[in-house]
Length: 224
Image (tube, rainbow, N blue to C red):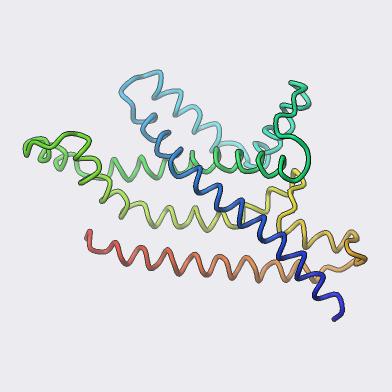
């Protein structure tokens, strides 16, 4: 098919945008999720309840809605488009939305992992003269990582597919690229078959991640 090189090139560009959004989201949400988890477990009541309220709001509302508010609110309400114009502005707004959303989901996984470690191990560490910092990094953290890998893996695979939601603010990710050939792009219109090719990209990406995360889980089996 003469149209194939054009379609594949466009899908590759869209996939790179998808991949960038995926990587940036993980880089930002992993540490932020841990901070929110500590906030949710804080003994200082205001911090604890504000963190829990924030997590409840983010987890209880659609990511698509959050993205639209984050992208459009500054310009339409505050009359200050902090994201700027063009693809880069949409990418930054989408990244911020995804990082906030996934950090809240990750925070609950972190919290569950930390609280699943028996309290007796912390007490034993204190008896042995370890500081709370040493206990967390040398005892709690290592066991927490083992416990959170399966649920984290599920969220990471979900993130791969959720990146497609960024098209709601016209970010030109891979689904946007595939659908553009239905509306008329590069001289091609009314073509639905490029959308089926996007499935191959998602399946391949998800398959590679599943294999890598599976290997990571096996390497952590020594904690059993």
